[in-house]
Amino acid sequence: SGHVPKAINIPHTEIAKRLDELSPNLNNEVIVYCESGRRAAIASNILKEAGFTQVIHLKGDMKAWRQHGLPTEGASPSTKP
Image 1: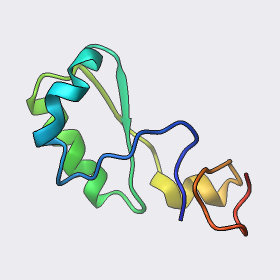
Image 2 (image 1 turned 90 degrees about the horizontal axis):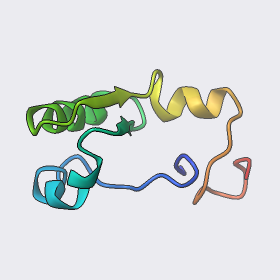
Image 3 (image 1 turned 90 degrees about the vertical axis):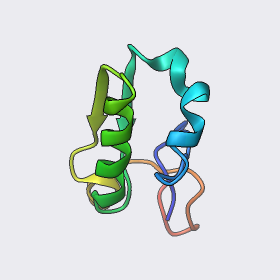
């Protein structure tokens, strides 16, 4: 159903395996989201436990993003560009 423009998609099941890839952002804002929040909360916990200092869970996740008419990438043609 699309994603936030310029977002990097890393499934919550892969976060722990890809921490080295993410480590340059250890002290930068890292925003996590999913469709409804459950998987993003798991990803957030993994990142925080790994020492990431600015993990932010997008309020309302993708469901709210779309409800507010915000742009998405990689979505079906019926979604706003």
